[in-house]
Length: 63
Length: 254
Image (tube, rainbow over all chains, first blue to last red; front, side, top):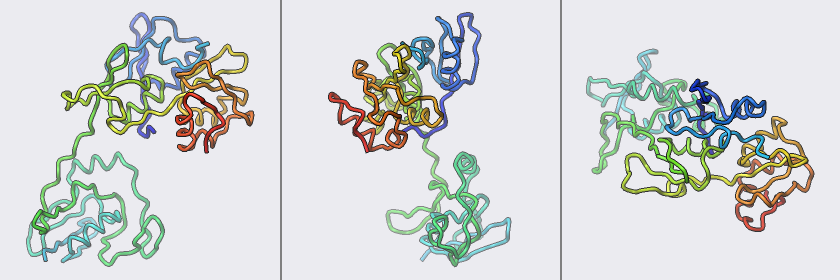
């Protein structure tokens, strides 16, 4: 089981504006409120890859 | 027998002619702190028990509970030691301990350089990420970022190639999708641990259905009609889910 500090993320909108640091809970909450749009990406702070925020990081509202 | 003197300049306490065994026991019990010094008995050169680098590392860890001298509480398993130089403020990092040489003689060496925590690149089916420590890999899996079938490559041992996490002792736990009543809202995948945390926060309700992430057609309610917090939380319960892959049932568990 993970026991380290929670991971933090950078969220980037289509225009390249970023918000950080965000927890996965913050991002999930934003998604539930409909604040995350298609084309937004997220990256782990310290990581290199940008993930599709709508597709991957957003646990909520898949159905 | 080689003995050592230890002292605490901040209080003026000094204990001479301590055997290596006594010092190691004192250290294990956490009765040493930053600023303590050591020397070989009969010599004049005091050396810090904890180099400044170790002091920096120690600040990142929880501090032990102060010892009550003479007590036999769990916080001080050995109680008061005759050589106890005082109460505990910080545990002794292993790298600062004196070493026993191959010949069996004790020798105070400089601190071993701390080994950096290994980091790994992560390969998913559609890209690479990292580097991350193994703890971070677990956290990213728990957050839903990394899939369970990702591969890892140790940064300083790239020749070993891509390996499953289990090669490095990481067993990424099974995750579950959660379907809310009505079926319009499906969340996840979440680990059992995350589900337990969400349950505690009241973010899940009893009528939710659960399915293993690799079997999204296999929804199961909990037979008790509510999300069983303790059930999700136990490692045993998680293991039972894994063992039931194929004929999965949420009723399994501790």
